[in-house]
Length: 541
Image (cartoon, rainbow, N blue to C red; front, side, top):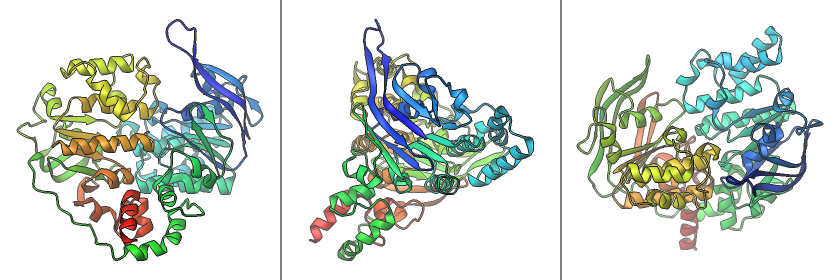
């Protein structure tokens, strides 16, 4: 179905054009029809470029030089442009808004079929099936710009699925989805593969969500692409792996489990040993200065009551994870805290500052927000210019922002344009711009979207240092593994209200939706991370 014959991709260097930058080379494999293939690799390794080779975006749209040959359903992508492959290959990009061409959900689902000339009655049936498949029926008439990031992602997937392609290519399809919605989308893809023979190729950093659905794995790293590997074989050597694999590696389990269910079977003895381990839940932080106080906050977005009666106090040294399903109000709360939205009622205080009335120049010195779309705060023509501009804007010593960037994502080329970066690389740059100013309160909206596990570990270290230095951190996230690693407290929002607020271990360990993989494997033992298990197992032995 999809064949890469000694494929490589390179781009001409900026400047005199005398050299080339190689993304990857020597990709040589065939992906069979009716299977789900997962592409795994670090941020910036070339996963997105590989996916774009499948529908001809590389080289016809993205530029660069394509070496070797890619054939899809017998069509050579060198001689068939993306529009000539559209009836066979559907492509879902990282940024859903960039692919929308209409205004409402229902119109967007129908647009692709209209372009392909699908008959009206068949079009209506496919739209209804897609709405049900992806849980979008209740927002069918909503404006796309008014949807949450996760809802937009599901619409983008649905718009491609509705057109009926034989091959579906997805770049980070669950990055903006809450755990339940992500599992629904992946389960839908799983059914399409098994029941209808759809061929799916996807790149995903949150492997804990998808590795157990995969039939095959391609490893992309260091400019090379592996052959087609079985998931268990790939996870034995991959530098990128989810907590269930990390636990199996740390405890030398064989065979290596790919799912929570398989790991629970192997962990029966471990649960018995750790059952007598002191329960660490409820450990309280010492009292500290409140840096952020929210009282009875009500916010409307149009006619929709997005926040209702939110009370929140965050002290110096706390790292608070805001969690909840897509559309619960997490991003709205963060936007309100920096004065981007005017409250209908309630008060916000950051120290002595009221961000709803203060000037932006004063706000950024006290509270900084990294938005879900990092491009919103990136304006310069290169990574280096972005770092220099941030140093100047915040009156920092030269190189301060670059130092932070190297902590989060080492080796990012300074001459690259922000729009040419991957989603994870753009996010790393935006994080660096905000964190370099050293605000007392740091707000992060989906900070691990597009980040691999290595970049996530560096982010955890950075946030931990901020906490130790007396900053307050509030992050809205669907990444339960990040919350387990770094949060001291979790606030769960639902329909604009706070329905839970407590220590991270108490809130996450018993939650079927938000528990991390380790907590599910060891339940009812309330340990959350691989490091905690290794330490406890060593002490108990």
